[in-house]
Image (cartoon, rainbow, N blue to C red; front, side, top):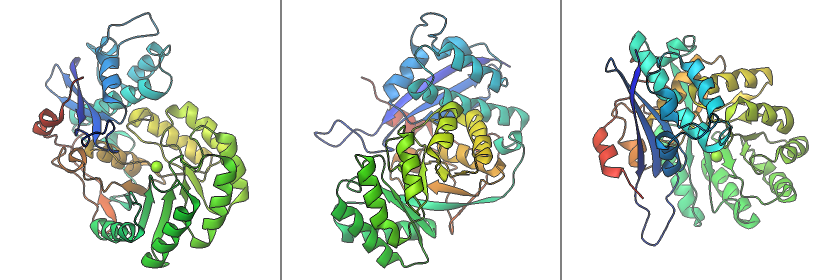
Length: 376
Ligand code: MG
């Protein structure tokens, strides 16, 4: 079997009038890999779709600056790890992290989807089999300036997925102390002590001193964890914070490859790591990162705020990981989450059920792709 074609789709819901940026989840890059036997695999990454498309379609430069299509067409799609290492090496000059690894993540997920369909087994079976049939979910929502409305969002998010734990984050959270303390106080008051609550700073606190003082003031509200209290690569500040506060610290959604996670876990010493399978290097790299998390006694709770492809890939990984019992569940209104995958796995009573269909188990609606494809 050979890779016959690779199509890359840049999708976006047009931004609101007068804006140049889209909300998180309102754009995505999809990769469709077709083999000469007719098997099709799907992958996704959350990056700038224009760059991702370029990384596949551009002409190759020198031997460390390859186009991904030139590396993959004609290859056996079942040689997943060999192809991963080939892509990493042959993009080394412009790659190693960031967008090149995002593009590799998308293709890697598509190759696992193909392998599952070829062997007629779900992806988790290829990863070593499953530890569990269901995975616990927590819900994520984005707060707004008005705290009464934010509390309403929280209550609605809780009902939507049947969760017993919620995370909130994104601006305006992080922008000023008064809001940060008040929104957590009000959420804790409204949700009660039996609902888990986590806060995602999303790198907005500007420095270590702010992070330390804010986390100390939030300790009384018993947060499950505080996510990305420092810049993603400011590992020393993570480490200083971890030694000063009682609340668990998490991070890693912006990091790529086991090499970056190795530095992050050894230096920053987070309690929880949150790789995103569509950005960290795909399923192949997520498996390596999970091994590293076990070696460093870190809890791995993946970032999951994209389409049904990310969701399915995350579920297959966690099902096959010894301690993979918890995951984020998006509440995004994006069509890429709600409509793209006809088999979208729902969170019911706070759990997702691991799908048993071959491959990832997704069923992509290509009309959604046609509707939101954009050019520039
Ligand atoms: Mg986050």
